[in-house]
Image (cartoon, rainbow, N blue to C red; front, top):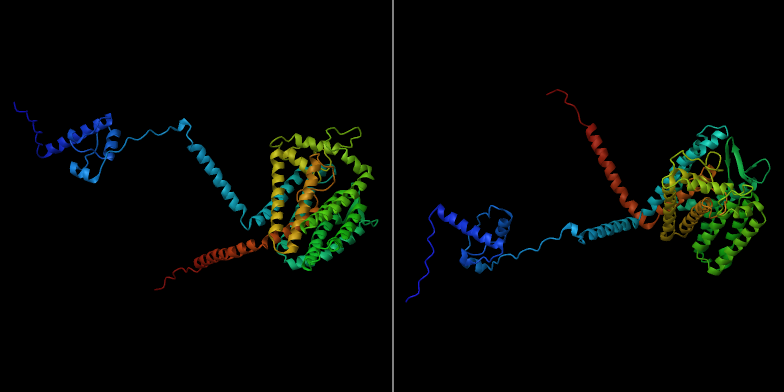
Length: 520
C-alpha cells in the first residue's frame, strides 16, 4: 500500500491576508521562544532576530513587523538567536561596585591633592595664606581675650585690639616690602641690624631708659603707651647676619674647618644671649639658642661638633635655671592639676582648665570664663588657652594646622633653593617661628615650663609682631625666587596682562560709541 503523502501547506492568502498570516506565524514563534521552546524553521520560518525577540518579551503586544528573511539568507549570514542573559545582581545583594567606586574616588582625590601639593607655587601660597590667616585669627582672639583686662585697668574695651590692629597694618607693610626686597638688599641689612640690636640691648640696662615688665628688664619706652622689646629685633638680626656669614664662608669653601664654622657665629650668639639674660628673659634666650642650632644644622655641621654645641648650651641653661628659684619653680609645675599651697602653679593650672572646658567646639567667642581674672596674661602668653576655651578643640587644631603648614612651606623653600643665603635665611626664620610656637603651646598644655614667650603672629604685642611679619616677608621672597616658582610667575604675568588689556579695550570701545547727531 503506498505511503500517504503529507498535505501541502495551505497557500498564502493574497494581499493583506498574507501580511496578517506572516505576523501571526512570527508571534507564534516568539511565544515559543519566550516559553523556552525551540524556534525551528519548520515551525513557520527562520529564527527571529535578537532585537525582535527581546522586544517581544518586554511588550505584551508582540513584536514589531521586521523585514522577513529567507532561510537561505539567514544561514548564509550566519545568524543565530542570542543566548539568554543572566539576571543582573541586585544592588541590595552587596555587590563590590560600591566599594570600588569609593576607592577610586578616594584615590582620585589623593592624586589631585598630590599634584596640587607639588606645584611650584604651593609654598608661596602656603606662607602667604597661612601667615595672613594666623594674624587675622589672632586679631579676633586678642579682641575677645583682652576686653576684661582692659576694663579692669580702666581702659576702653578695644584698647589692646586697636594697638594690635595698628601693629598688624604696619607689619603688613613691612611684610610686603620684604617680599619685594632683592636678595642683595637683604644681605646688606644684616650687619646694620646686628649693630642696632646690640646697641639697644645695652641701652635696656641703662637706668631711666630700660623698663621692667613682669620682672624682666627688657623693654624700652618709646613714648606714650608704646614700648619696644629689643630682644625681638635680635632674633631677626641673628637670622640675617648668620645666613650672610655662612653664605660668604661657603663661597670661600672654609666651612669644612671647624674654627671657621664656629667663629664668629657662636661668640656673637653668646654675646646676644648674655645681653638678653641680663634682662632675665629666659624665653627669648631659648629661641635665640634654637636659631643657632638651626643654622648649624642647615650648614651641615659635623655630628660631633653639633652635639658639643648642644651639650654646652644645655649645661649653660641648666646652670641658669638652677641658680634661679623662680625658673626652678616653673619646672615643678609640669603636669600640675592643682595650683599648689602658695599658688605657684596658678597660671599653668588655669590654662589647663580653660582648655578642658572648651570641648569640641568651644563655648563661643567672648564666652570664656577664665579671662575674667582667673587666668593671667590671657591675651599674650596664654591666648592659646582662651582660644581652646572659646573655639574648642576645632579651633586649637586649626591653629596647629596653620603653623604646621607654615613650617612645612619654610622647610620646602629652604630645601629647593639654589642660593645658600636664601637657604640659611629661610631655615633660620622657619626655626624661629616653629620653635617659638612649640615653646608657647607646650607651656599652655603643661608639657613645657612657662617661658614667657608669645605665640608668633597670634599673641598681643607689636614689638614681637613687626619683626615676625618682616621675617615672613623674607620667606615669601624666598618662595617667589625659587626657579620653578619664578618660571610659573613669569608665565602667569602675560596671561594677566592680556586679560587686563581685553578689559581696557572693551571699556574703551564702549566709551567710544558716538550717538547719532541727526544730520544726514
